[in-house]
Image 1 (tube, one colour):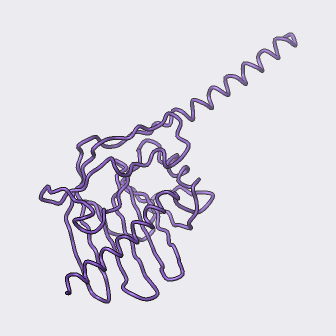
Image 2 (cartoon, rainbow, N blue to C red):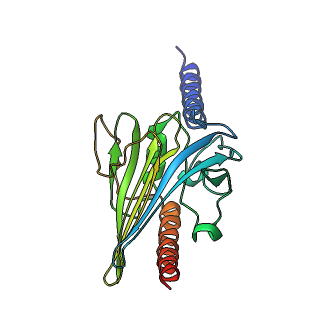
Image 3 (spheres, rainbow, N blue to C red):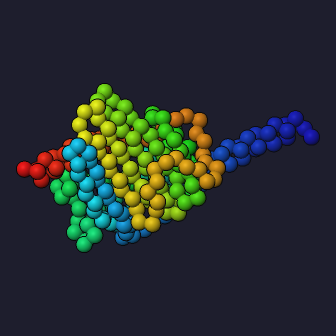
Length: 237
């Protein structure tokens, strides 16, 4: 075999290798596991200590639109579905707004079809230490945030079947003042918030959670606390 032919074969092999790498990135197989107008039922429970207060609401969420998933997904935020692609409703069909209960319940969804990629991209935005939750039907994370006067623990879980959030659990413990718990559970799913494993979970190289989602949860949690306290004070007058 001539030297020129050998060089040509090597160049062809390198080109084919590059094409295969690109194809592996673009063919991520991610898709939404639900459609427009699909509805998901939830129960929202708010609990506060000192003063004691509890409220439970049966709600449902309807999908209004589906955001497009980029051909080349490079960030978790590019495939996470958040507001305004859905609308909350009371059980009787009345639309829920922040003016009704003082805040809008936190909700999100992720695509299905490539769970490893979803978790890897989520880990790329590591900023908080968290524990992975991985069962036969759900996956998610639990993480904590500590401030000068507040300690927060958040658990978020998603269904492996359709990528829809199955649990949002927030506990806010201030150094002084009431402890507030927000528990949003999807119908048909367990309320447990403990990190559990029934199969081999994804093991990220770093520790953390998507910064955008953490920011939303953090700001939303603060607004929830203020809204609930204000509501209790108004009821007691």
